[in-house]
Length: 184
Image 1 (cartoon, rainbow, N blue to C red):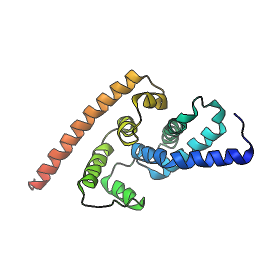
Image 2 (cartoon, rainbow, N blue to C red; image 1 turned 120 degrees about the vertical axis):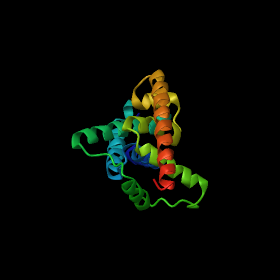
Image 3 (spheres, helix red, strand yellow; image 1 turned 30 degrees about the vertical axis):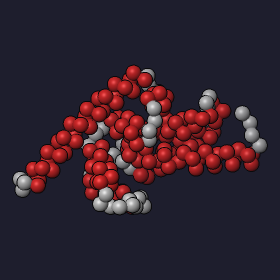
Image 4 (tube, rainbow, N blue to C red; image 1 turned 60 degrees about the vertical axis):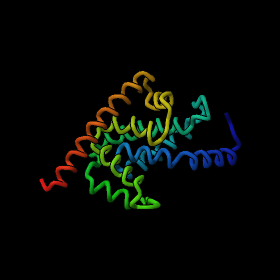
């Protein structure tokens, strides 16, 4: 599909605006490094715009960019051998410096979000990836399969396993908090 240059630039800008935050937030939750996430997202959009003619279903642009950006982030992690941030202090600093301002810092929703993110940081990248795509980015099983280039059965199996590991980590997290509260 060919567009006049000014029309293509406008289309690119609209697609970028519509998808950027969703892709960035998902990647940042998965890899826990905002700078690497920014780089991967930018590279993902660049590659997507350069290869736009390869996109079969235009209404799935965001999922397609997500797939490209996730693969780009994995390549960057392998190439640079960078460590994924897991420290609670580093995570807290990231959230504070990201400009995220919760509407009510003591609300149950904010506390739950912090608890979920704390447990997510203790999971491996593959588990975080599948859970973030499903529950934070609200992608369907079919969309996740397309993004990760795996079968829907594999998505369901990975989700089941990741949820189980999440439950275990969450239980261990709550148990350790209870022990801390007892002065042990």
